[in-house]
Amino acid sequence: MAVKQFLLPDLGEGLTEADLIAWKVKVGDEVKLNQVLADVETAKAMVELPSPFEGTVVALQVAENSTVAVGSPLISIEVAGAEPDAPANLVGYGPSESSGTARRRRRTGSGAAALALVEQAAEPEPVVVPPAAQAQPVPERVPAKPSVRKLAAELGVALDLINGTGIGGSITRQDVEAYTRSLTARAPQPHSAEPDAGCAAPPGGAETRIPIAGVRKHTAAAMVRSAFTAPHVTEFLTVDMTATMALLAELKARYPDLKLTPTTLVARMVLLALRSHPSLNSTWDEQAGEIVVKHYVNLGIAAATERGLVVPNVKNAGALSLRELATAVAQLVSTAREGKTTPADMAGGTFTLTNIGVFGVDAGTPIINPGEAAILALGSVAKRPWVIDGELAVRDVTTLALSFDHRLVDGEQGSKFLADLGAMLTDPRMALVV
Image 1 (spheres, one colour):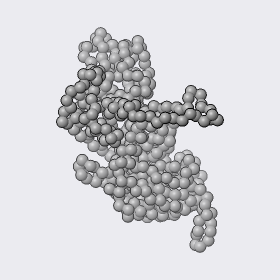
Image 2 (cartoon, rainbow, N blue to C red):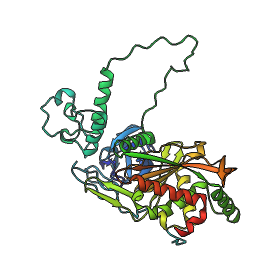
Image 3 (cartoon, rainbow, N blue to C red):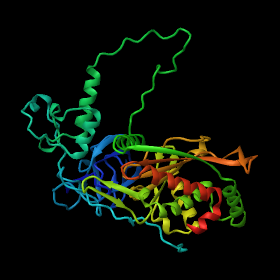
Image 4 (cartoon, rainbow, N blue to C red):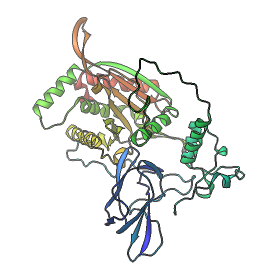
């Protein structure tokens, strides 16, 4: 008999950490090979971790709702007839990067989870060193991964003030976060006034504290990174969508099995417009000093779920027929709402569409997903007064909001894309000549 450790694997997306949401086993349980051990959440996706061993659980080394670094031990399992060596990773998953200078391999555009085209359209557990033992000279180059350095820069923290608890004294994300919390705790707190006698506090106190974890944490980090990296520009265009809404009603009546929505038709028009405006389907490669124009579109569809906002994408969406696109979008949204979106579904997006109109909102200024050049927000479609040939009429009107990265997209390019899209939504026949 030997005890083996199962380490948190790199789930294939170059991620450095995950949140352990729930254990599916307990100490003393007998587990089979590939039996689900735990649910973890990373990059806004919930993932089930299968067991690489068959044996008896002897220790759970991570508490639920904890953030775990890739390569850290999760669980110890006693295995019959095995050598007493230790950690194991899942077959098919790579180890975490051991060097902060190692570059991640670039993903290809097709993606492992690309949808098929049916109708072709055009180590041991890390030891936390006590603070007293960490009092030693800080090297000139403080050891920390690039992601940790970026986090420290965003928080305004100097790395040479932090004692690292990682391997070889390297500074981890947890070290940076703990140091930041200690600064907050030491800061003088303002005196709070006595509560208003006429205002009763809710049961349990006047405040509710919710841990920043899971989807909310990943979304916040991504949006902060985008807002402080890409110079955002947002343009608005109000459009008469009466003809498009009439076309939608006609198609739904003629093809009741076709899962069409306003989002689907707008998505189709977006894909057509991107053919003429490829700069909006590009990315900024800082390390290579290059602008990478994508010749495929992985169309992200923002979906509101109970766990928060997730943005899975339809792989190679520009090659799909309208029927295929409608089916793919419906499947992605359904999977997202069930909490079953995979990392592969989330990875590799090139352009995002979000429909804020479903919440009754007319317009907004969407934040670009990191790594993409633009995002389009579709406002509510409502009956409004509109002037046609000098006469006042009631029409189906919406507002489009396009945010784009001004490093990649000039104002002229963004404006022409928005104008072309608006023309197609005003008169869907225009899509025939794009």
